[in-house]
Length: 166
Figure: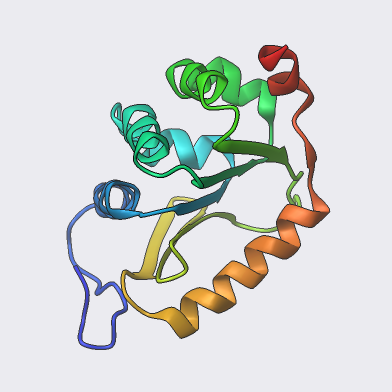
């Protein structure tokens, strides 16, 4: 749910469920770009069973689809989200996967950017979970996209998923 300023308002609803709903909405409504930077444990926590299908439909709708997944551990991705990895194997021209090892002292943060017009961040620090985001704010989304690009450049190609593609 968005407030007037676009930030997700705090409610008594489970932040994981709110994040799951927002990820679903953003991925279903993304036209051409969907970038996800997430530790596998957070992605597993909020990705629903339809995420692989949603990514496949997005790739089929648009020839120049740009789906990027930046994770902390590509082997864990294969082990914990095998249906998603199976979809990634089939969408090799639309999806890129890279690995960026996180700072050990930082909280776990998942960032999602859709079409340069919407973003969300889901943070887990200890037992606390916080969701922030805006589904329609180009200025703040552009900042998040720049941060994503910097992390993407700092990452490395996924060795595990490259082997899967061969």
